[in-house]
Length: 302
Image 1: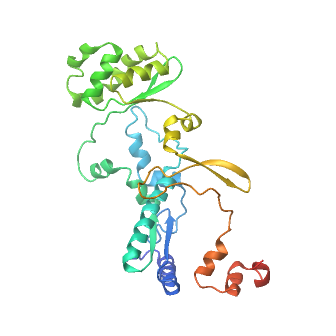
Image 2: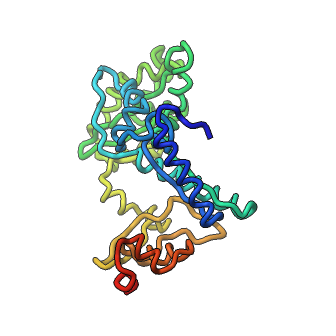
Image 3: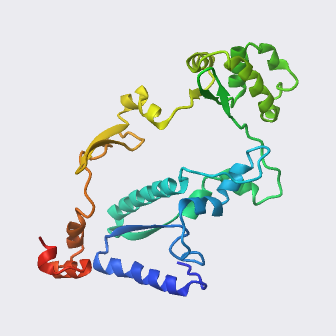
């Protein structure tokens, strides 16, 4: 492991922690998630998801696709938190598989900063060379009489299907759109024409027409509306669980496996419910657990 010379106190503490657990339980796998990683010059900096969004370049990369805007936007959904958790999930699963052959555990160090950088794959490449940023179609909402629809015109086939829907098939040979590589630059003009048609139909009629011509599309929905989607019901995407407060629905993992059941447990554990059992698994005595918890042994065992 390469340690930073600018944060020796943090690195020494981290090294001590990394060495301590294997001596107690060599097969232990444990994971640390932090803003910048457990070691290095930024290891001690405080971080929340919005801070990491900014630090990773993600927000400025997103801004580059917003014509006419110069100020980064607010982000109310914290991608960094969720994405880093997904990477941690994959790392832990990999470590468990590795342990099945090596019989050894390990410490996993997951960085939110590095996780967010993985969302800017093209931009990471462009940042390393003196090249013009590539063109990418920027899709926006199409207004209907009762809502908005997203239509992704990402191929020549879907482009031609869209022109059929709006009643302008002659635009297929129009010099403005004839070359597919030029279409992203003309997308704004095209979408204005699309809305001349879409504003005369309902969202349901718009989707029927677009899907009927092979144009990928969906209505803009609230989360509550999305949860009522029959597709999610068919997939069993939601599981009902209970805790001391009652019952509620949670999302199952977004994949299905032919050889294993992938579903949330029926009951949610309460805070600290399994702490003592896990501490016993590490080999600690009741007195050591009580000292760890800061409570008298007799009271802590009740």
